[in-house]
Length: 465
Ligand code: FAD
Image (cartoon, rainbow, N blue to C red; front, side, top):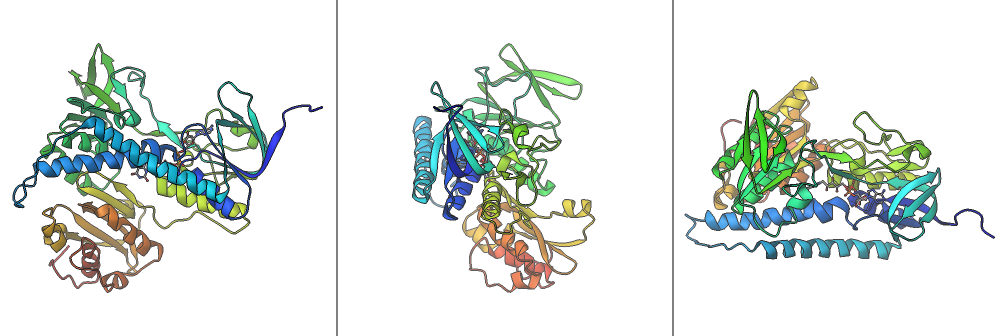
């Protein structure tokens, strides 16, 4: 006779199979633990299915279309035709390829996968519900919460209205909307708005702050605003999109308000951590004021319970989730571990691409840290000339001891340069170490060396920063 539910036993239960959860599951399995990974949606989470990956596929395709229209002067004439249905199929095939790769990795590591929605029933027990069948129970020694985040919904612009969608809906389109409104000029809104403008949509971006990308450096956001203007994007800053009246969006700016009709309105005003219904109280996990799960340096939320990724505070980025996963797994394996990065690179895949790593002049000033800066413009770079795109710069910051503490960049492909500066900051590299590292010519990465040379007082291809 069995009284109560029979639970299956695992050393580690991971809730959520995004970049945080699947990495944590693999790391724990590699450390010899039996692991169950519970996911209510698809392996890969937000990033692989409806975030980083499909958005970058869309942006790449939009860039190809845009290049076709702007290749004049290179001696090459390209004409682009856009098949939005095929573009969507291509996004799906890239996503499918990557998610099935992750599934193979999980299988190879011996991670057991359960489909369903999980919540804590007791300190060491999770219940997993999937559709009609009886719920399954798992008993664990350690659990990792990696439930991610979801788009914030605005009162008055609910996602269930046919004219309104979120970033997921915007990435699922099989047509190019003629008139597209994007509410929110954070990185997701700007990336989507730029891509659809390049594909031919008339895009209007509505932002409450007084500039696009308000969290990025002002020089960076003004370069993006300028390019948006060139692309024909209407940017309404210091403006609020409040509600629909009939089929029209009400946009208010100060005292004035207007009603504008759009084919589609994408609301991209931030993301909210997925903490509801998890039974966090049962395991003694607490929330911060921002609604994220409170964790210590080892990403421990309470005894034997860890939380990582978007569900915890900090930048909601895939690489932050992955790095935290390694810390939580190491801690579970009994190794000393702390999440204490010197810098988490932030990239906006807009036009030009933007990177911010470590301190900026503004954040250094706010923190009372004295820094020296040098800006190398791509107008002085040779690779940018060969690529026919001289827009942008690399600004490098060093503290008064000469240690590299930050960088802001704008330009074609600068996303690929973020790792070098992150490494330099993490290793506490000095100005001279960066300046005297031979960088290949002609590459965009030379701009980092040039900026370091400037900081060292020996600028080469510019006279001053
Ligand atoms: P998620 O990836 O959100 O995964 C959480 C998983 O948990 C989900 O699959 C969810 O279904 C599951 N889950 C939730 N609750 C439960 C439950 N109770 N039971 C079972 N399963 C549950 N980041 C970058 O670094 N670079 C980018 O270029 C980038 N672009 C983005 C573009 C867009 C449009 C969006 C929306 C996001 C983008 N991000 C990007 C952010 C990135 O996707 C997230 O930071 C990342 O996915 C967070 O990983 P995570 O593991 O914490 O959570």
